[in-house]
Length: 146
Length: 146
Image (tube, rainbow over all chains, first blue to last red):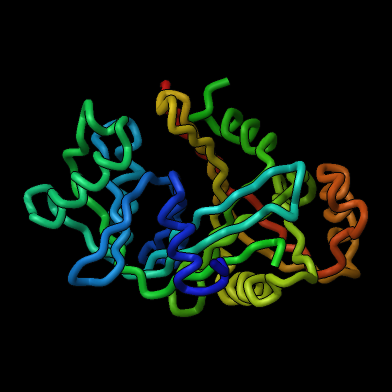
């Protein structure tokens, strides 16, 4: 499948274990954090879910949520880099609109279930905080070998 | 060295081989791409350089430069992820102000030299396009084990 197509980029993104989330604050300043995520499909089409855990990165967690509330435009990137073979490099990107889900909501509970299924590490302590949902409006991708 | 300090985050970032660059367009939409980079120190303090190569990702290259010209606020992230040990995860971030250097400029030539020194892959075909310089105003970092 061609990673440069919508379907190809989506398929590759779905298998990535980590992505980087870019949000933008009210002063148009970008903010970046790595996230683990799960891809779901529902009423909003493709939606990428990530949980805000209650651990030390609290300040950063709050910042990304405040940013999404002020400006819901977000971008997520997954990529592959290796020094030894630049012809093997690729990246995939999801651009979309973010929504903050409170822990009690149905969609938040479903998202946490997707995350727990995908990351056994989450099972001991399922995320209990808000969930960031990003409705994907555009999938894109690039590969060095194409 | 504590990764949460300015010096610690800077030291870890300097050893990373790949980073992700977030820029913001005139409509406050974030844009994300992975980059290889070199860290230099000069008249502007710490500056992160990345080159725009003349290869297939031309459209993305142009977008990041147009974004920086419209809004120079950028963020760069390097991180470590491994499924097997979430206690080993870390990330470092550089927030700063971008400048676009044209190929002929002294600083662009010095940047290309830094990049070629750091990435032997660049030696066969040194980057010939514009260079993005990001003057770092803030280093920050996080580690799961702290």
